[in-house]
Amino acid sequence: MHVRKLACVMGLAGVLNLGARHAASEEPPDGLPSLAARVAVATCATCHGPRGQSVQPKFPVLAGQHANYLLAQLQAFRAQTRGDPDAIGYMWGMAGPLSDELMGALADYYSAQTSRRGEQGDAAQIARGRQIYQNGDSNAGIPPCAACHGSGAAGTDTYPRLAGQHVQYLLKQLRSFQNNMRNVAIMHGVAKGLNDADMRAVATYLQSL
Image (cartoon, one colour):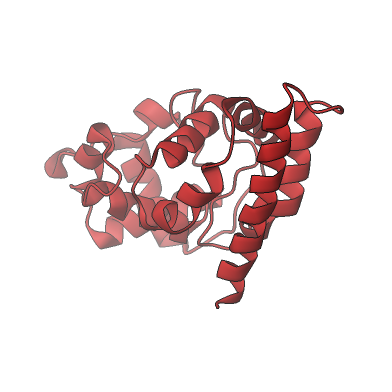
């Protein structure tokens, strides 16, 4: 079995155990925040890194992400309504045993972590990506990303923080929006107008923030 898959299976077993212990009593003795921190360190960090600072470009940075957005995604994973490849391969199973209360505590834990600036890429790509992100491309029917995610890509409670996110992860999600594996109408409308070069430029710009 692939090492990362094995780690996720072992992590899932830990989540199941913690979830069962949480379900057995209304509140763990040391509180939900402490339980969430233990789950984050013992399980989530395998893919998302210590305190949500992912160093694996396939897996998103969670540090500094908005709590409401994180909670909505965890609920979508558990309900199996978010359908991108890694949601199906990893997160459907990982989120399955989590209660709403523990999901909320995990979302609060990650939103409280300090975000960091991402790696810098090709300057020309960053410039092109900034242009599309801030102003859109009227010829291709692409609205400015900043209209929802903010001029600095810090996001809101409704729209995710994109600043500092990995290029590989962003590309994977944009392609999932394009083909409706992630069935989000507004993002399908944005992503369908992006060619591969412009998609990579936007992702490179966002990672640089």
